[in-house]
Length: 348
Image (tube, helix red, strand yellow):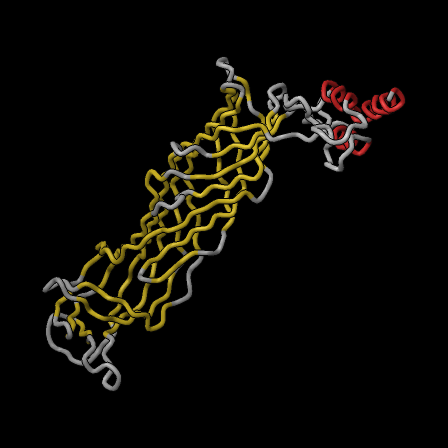
């Protein structure tokens, strides 16, 4: 036993020299609390210019809509020039998200990092999807239904209401920062978490989403120890605007336009048009609270969150025994293999 203890002390010296820079940090598994709140609005604007024409076809749809330019006269089915801005808007209002993250924090240095961050923003709730268009066209008439469409300039028309059924973000890269101490024994932090964002829902009766897109979730808030547990309180406040590449052109795309005079009908049209590049603007406001529990450290035999000489003493006192807490590899005996595991996690 004395020889084994001597060897263990020698190995201990080697482990101390090889300890990592953040050795004094402790890791906490934090879960987003139910009282957390998340609100987001994402608005897209896509300019579109082209023509529309009634869906009438003498052979295949003789009772379809026809379009005729002007107030009076004319016949047949004629293409009507238009311009519009398509404006889908996705809204999440006061959702209560769920999720987890692992936080490493060293109060002595302020070293701070987040790993394994994942958030289910809706967590079984739903968001809204609405689409408006801002429309400009010259006066035209339709048959089937018989209606007059007086010319308009930049008039907004609501088209569709859909739903958002899923919105998640999963960490994809390192998120490292330094927390600064406050007078009230808390620490302030700010860190950007690179994530893959996935949304799913339906609009115009069709599903959308399902493909992750890269993004960054900016978290800023405080770290505090409450009854010995770490509590992360983070705010998300982001406003971001980015260009959107032009989608593919529309070719004979069905489009239902609400009638104007008289109202209450629907003109069945076919659109041909070309999009220009647009924009997407997102505003996020969230308050997240995530209490944490210590992540077990292999070799921490007294449960104080660090592996040090106290744990080594417990290891040596159990040396050669059959199992127990010091049997870190669960092979039925406390020996050098267990000591190696303990030393590889040495903290101070």
